[in-house]
Length: 91
Image (cartoon, rainbow, N blue to C red; front, top):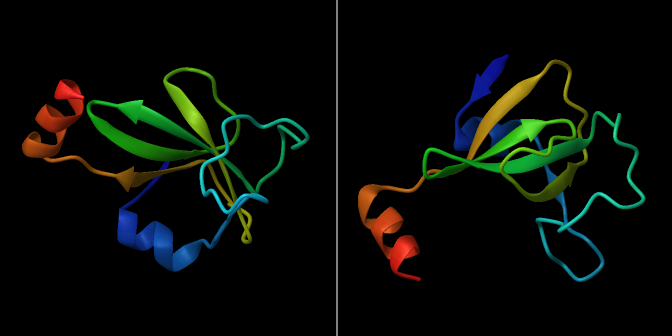
């Protein structure tokens, strides 16, 4: 699986917001699950990742990009440092 940093993802892919202007969509309703423009945002080890394709485990939502992914890819979406993680746990 190809690994990308947050900056590398931003350089290679353009995220398409939904009709309300939100980047992350709560569901993939109406989107072909086999689409190469579909990514799943997942929570793993206290950080968020964009994983190519349709996934269920640790899923927070979905994004669509203007550019198709060529191979299975995992990209850092939002890397939390220790201070951010502690703040998130406190709510």
